[in-house]
Every structure is written in structure tokens, then in C-alpha cells.
Amino acid sequence: MELHIDVPWILQVTEAAGADDPAPDDYGVPVSAVARHRAELFEQPVYDGPYAKAAALIHTLGRCGWLERSNLAVAAATGVMYLEAAGISVKPTRNDAIALKDLLLDPACTCGQIAALLRTWPTAS
Image 1 (spheres, rainbow, N blue to C red):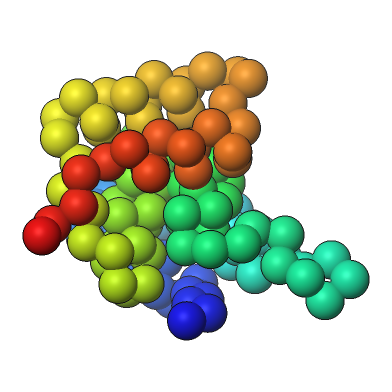
Image 2 (cartoon, one colour; image 1 turned 180 degrees about the vertical axis):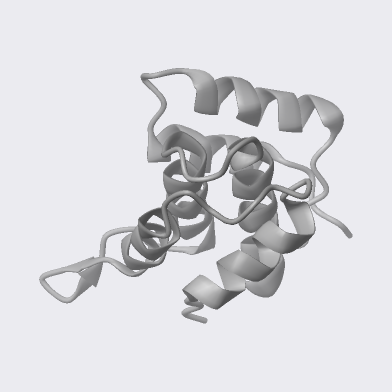
């Protein structure tokens, strides 16, 4: 299944997970996240599979400042909800969330590293 989300979907997640953040400072970031997870090169997906697409969303939303205080929470929630919508029910622990936060705060963080981390998260049976 090829699942693509849109900007209104990200804004709904932001409303739910955004800790009462005011309106986004830069709507270009969620627009970029949507374009990035859909990216194709020579008619082939740049990010193949749900973990890679979720990682692309998380990386863009978490590394680019667009909310006053909840970039990381919204990025993580978007990734989890994307995986859920793709049929992968992940149940990250507190340590999983901390590992993601630490990774996103590292300037050398890559989308591939995030996808690898997401694949280690426990799934619901």
C-alpha cells in the first residue's frame, strides 16, 4: 500500500500533539515534509516503504523549526500516526521516544538513522 498524507493531516496531528503551540511560524515546513515523503526520482520512490516515509516526515518536521515549542513532539506523533495509518501499530516506550529526541537533536541526524530506529520500536501484536 502506498500511503501519502497531506498538509491538513499534519496540521491535525499538530493540533493534537502540539502542546497548545500557537500557529506555526513557517507553513513551508509541513509542505516540505509532504513533498519529501512523496518524492520520486526517475519514477522510483526516494523513500521506499512506510518506515522510510515516516522517517522523512519526522526528519523534516523535527529538524526544521516551524513551531514555537513542540517540533519534536509533533514530529514523533506524525511518524507514529503515519505508521499506524500504514498498518504498522508501533508502541514506542519512553526510552524509544528519548532515543528519537536525542537523534533529532544531533546535527548529524539522517533520515536513514531515523528509519533504522523506528524499525526497532515494538509493535502491537
